[in-house]
Length: 305
Ligand SMILES: [Zn+2]
Image: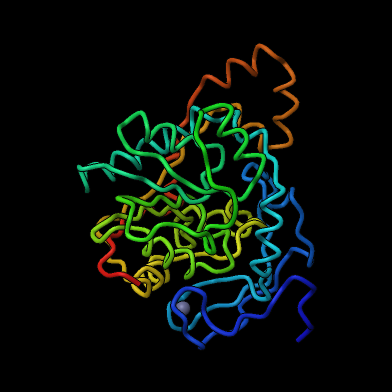
């Protein structure tokens, strides 16, 4: 077994359920370097993973060695991703579905905290529906865009170690966040601390056992260097249970994208997009990817962690 590269550590237990029964599962296809480009949301290089270990207890798959929290947080602090805002409208549609679910489960609304808020699209929408928006984002660039474009003031930095009020929020949203953090238990536990009793956590993450993951195999679009873990239903339930949450609703998650965005992910079709009229038309064509490749889980905080 080789020594982990600088900025990486070997895992001693399962990051989801905490069990020590873990073993190496498969060798990765990424070298021991991680850059800003690797972690952009719009990164289109699929099929790349770190060396992965498997938990024999809950089936969780995770990067091992794993980048340290310090390394990951400093990397996200400097990331800039202007392509992300190109799809603001499609992203807002995705977030609308999540807010409607929260509103049906907890009709009172109130303060809502978005973790990894990016440029503030979800919070802008939440505010227009009567929620009080609050959130945190590591990227200084994204925090600036959120302020300038949406008038949303975000806290900047890593969520897991932020100083935040306890027992305050009616809802916490973590959309495509948990697979990016090297310390998922700390993240979910923190969500439990800031939620008021009975508050709701909405969490979305790719499902490694989904049909799309099986069909796409090693070319699955969620196999990316930015993803440090791959959850299944069992490992996600284990993680949430350990942090004092009970799952109250589960759905398959389908993203909405413009045809332009999807085509720009493929090198061959990027040539076509050089035609400005065609590109502008394709940006207006919205596609719901009914792939159900992710989980959408709603969990209630049962007790204070
Ligand atoms: Zn486990």
